[in-house]
Amino acid sequence: MNRSQVLQNIEQLWGKGELEEATHCYALIVVDQISDAASEELLSCHTPSELANWIRSDALAWQAKLSEEAFAEQFEIGHGNAYGCIEQMLSCVDYAFVFDLLDSTRDTD
Image 1 (cartoon, rainbow, N blue to C red):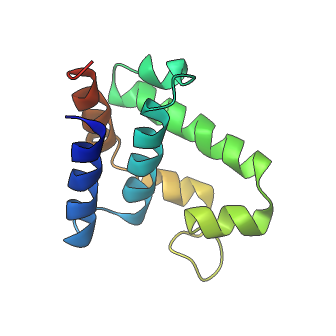
Image 2 (cartoon, helix red, strand yellow; image 1 turned 135 degrees about the horizontal axis):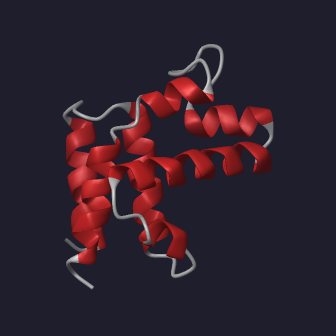
Image 3 (cartoon, helix red, strand yellow; image 1 turned 180 degrees about the vertical axis):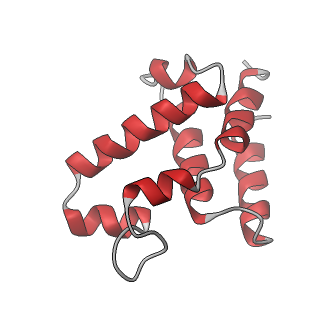
């Protein structure tokens, strides 16, 4: 699939309520990163487990880069948000789904 097809697929599933907030968020981040040539580390992920490690590292990098408030807003983490903490958010990501999206974009290269 190309980038627009992947985005359309994500948004359709999101609209139907079939994606968890965390999966939706990271699916969009991964698609955005795929189009960024600097993301060799992401593209070197060949299993859902490797992608899970990349996502964890990416989330921690965002947490270090953003203010606490901005991070909480962007990732729906904290009191009154979808997730109480970063670990809860990460446990809700469907890594196999996001990996399949990543893998589907390789077929078009």
